[in-house]
Length: 174
Image 1 (cartoon, one colour):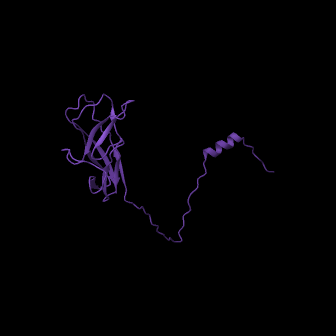
Image 2 (cartoon, rainbow, N blue to C red):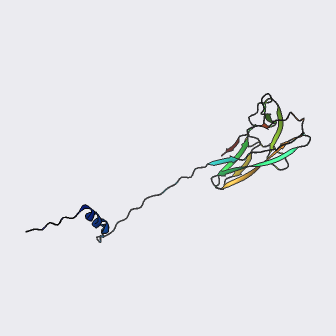
Image 3 (tube, one colour):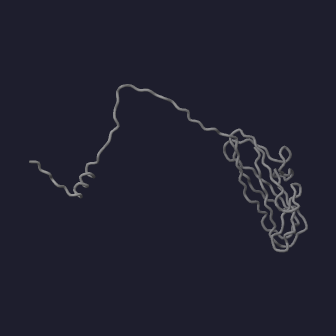
């Protein structure tokens, strides 16, 4: 005569969790063989650029020059040569040689203030957007490199009170 013992579902579940079933990788001793595979990464010449705002602050009468500076950060792959250019900005009539800020108040958007961007602290070399002529050259190191942009609002007739602005695009050529 065979005896069958009945176990409740709860008791069976407790039994399963109390003694987990373990699996082991088999161990073989018949020999070994190997294969190799190639791992690759291709680095291509590349650059990124970031720009900080240039704020000349507040001024009353523009009887003397107002000088300020800002920075650009360029990151290029190691040994990649580059040029950084600055365009004339978004104000109608603005050129690299004669940059303009325009008023922002209604009825004053045609009023402008002259300003300039330079490559050097002495503010003698205009920073433009034509390679081999008025851009700033460098060679990438693989890390961010900081370049200073020197700005100046020269003494000039002072227009009506307003906020004057332009948006300049910095371009990295590589």
